[in-house]
Length: 224
Image 1 (tube, rainbow, N blue to C red):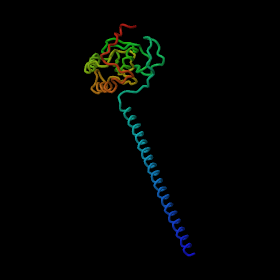
Image 2: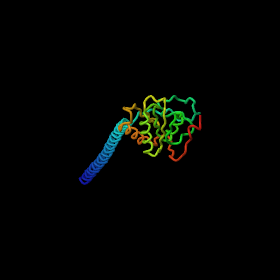
Image 3: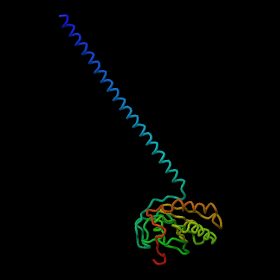
Image 4: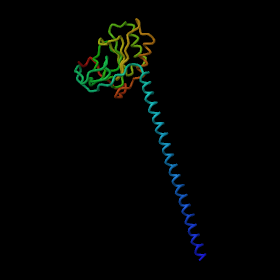
């Protein structure tokens, strides 16, 4: 009888031991699972914080970069090809136009001593060109200085011509960007020349289409 009781006690004891061990194992598994979940949450939160910081930095970077670039930004109003002299689908939003409906052919790169239709030069800007326009009554010295700037860069992606419709003495235009100013004297100051050169370097080849300099255009006088 005593042996049976002892055996029962031993069985009960081992049951308790095994149950305790099982509970301990479950607790260890549960704790390990909790640790893994917590670790993943921490990693996820850190990644979100880093990405959030990166987004904020990029916003500030591009905002400051945009503010530091020369000229004024004008949103594109299209790039449709239209007959020369016709009304564009959307009104131009800058003077000179910096985007919008334009003639189907661009002009040859270089300097022109006569007014060229805006819609031809808009196509040049679509190809990544920069357009230097000046009022016809600016001093001859200024015109010579502008020509020297064009020559300095080998005429690469540059067109220049007088433009009576300018509302400032000088307007330098690229796709969606315009730099305008009135002359401070009878000639182009060093600061003004530097502005033009900086604008050209910033926006050359920034049009919607990339076209090599070597691709010929048209003689503007060949179309009306």
